[in-house]
Image (cartoon, rainbow, N blue to C red; front, top):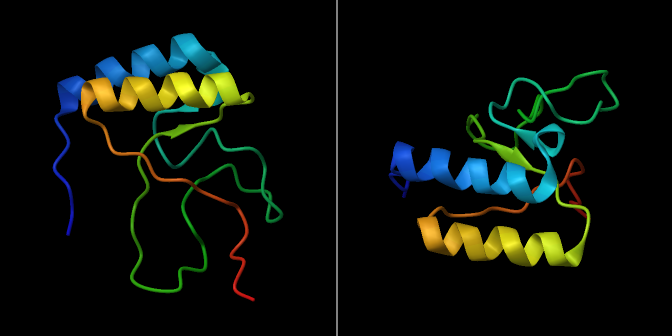
Length: 92
């Protein structure tokens, strides 16, 4: 099931998120802004998907527990779903 996200609420949420973590810790599009991966990529897209390919949404990189709490509160306020991400696959 894919959730429909209101674009206005998403943008408002991203503005709040940027004020929490700083614009340099927020990637508004999946093709750039990620920390450099092992393959030299700066993309949040998975070059080796286990299932059907998908396009990730914006990414937020909080550094503290307090930032995580504020991000979760803002996501609840703007009704934006969150999904945790790891650069590894952790299959084993």
